[in-house]
Image (cartoon, rainbow, N blue to C red):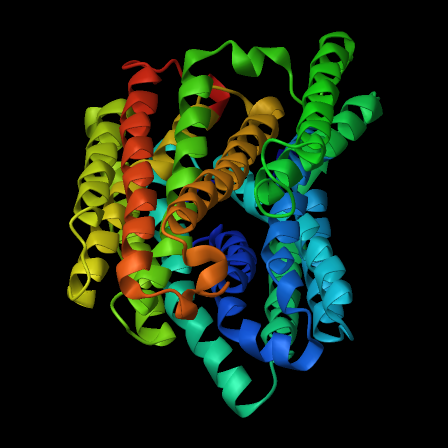
Length: 484
């Protein structure tokens, strides 16, 4: 077993655990900035490398690689420790970044984005797991503000850096900038975070890992590309999704007999974990709907620039840390469930305001709506994960965190598929697809607006499901003594 050797003291970057917290923040910053910086460079990348029809895979393959790797990393972290997995993740992400910066074609860039995704799949859950290891439940309430601030800063820094690199240097620098950040994060983690390893024999669940990787990849691939590369009702769709279901069923059967399963069956038998994972999945759906269609509405319907649309969406990642930094004091006083209910109601209210947006409206209303949803997310996303982590000891925290992160990635894949199908069906019904072209700039605002409103309605439906998911979480949560 591996346990962190960290003396408990005050919370903050200047405390004894501050360097570890800072290294986790830098590692999270790698992923956070990457999620916002790339979108601004896509036109320049396509102009340089070509492959316009392939560029969506820059995002899809990253999501796919990240999602299928998370549960495996979570299990390995409970076996060999968090530090080794975190260092591997940062190394893989930086390596992928360098390769992306050197890419000579769109297929090569897509392949190297998969390497980045494999690294990100380790960085995000390991960061949250390390925080769960070195801080008590009460302390984590304060630490949330530090972690949430990373995403707020990235929401502004990412688009700004992307624009500067593309305009004054070269799009390749959006990947090279990850090298110094990763180097500093590794240096601080190696020097300041120590784990004591007790050598024990483990049986690695290779069969489960392979089945989950292949089955999960096929499922996410089918959800991402169904209705795009092939019709939903078609032999390719049936083959991909059917194969995914068979492999995942086989994975479940293997896990029941495995000595040390990747995803133990007890994860699906605890009400708190089911509720937290369903919250995470629903959050993933709503987030992908906002990040994909709010900028499109701002540019295609309200006729704003890409930069203005990006900053309107960034209002969500400003509201998020503001709420998250105060969520700790709230859930310590009124409980995780009540805090989550407040957050989910705010998200529902924001989703309802999305339905009021119309052509000719103000971009400030869009920003205010995103800010409100961000406030709600700050009160529900991390607190629900902390609630799940608090119910298990060190030896299971990696698995629980990995399962929660996997649920969010699956939510994003489901959201892309559902919202894409809704928008495409609306546009096809009005003859926009094929007659007006294949880009948003070719679709008149009066045609595009109703299609996006259908997506916003879908987001509101999932916001209702988010409230239901929070209600699944028990009022009283039995915490593990070692998690305090």
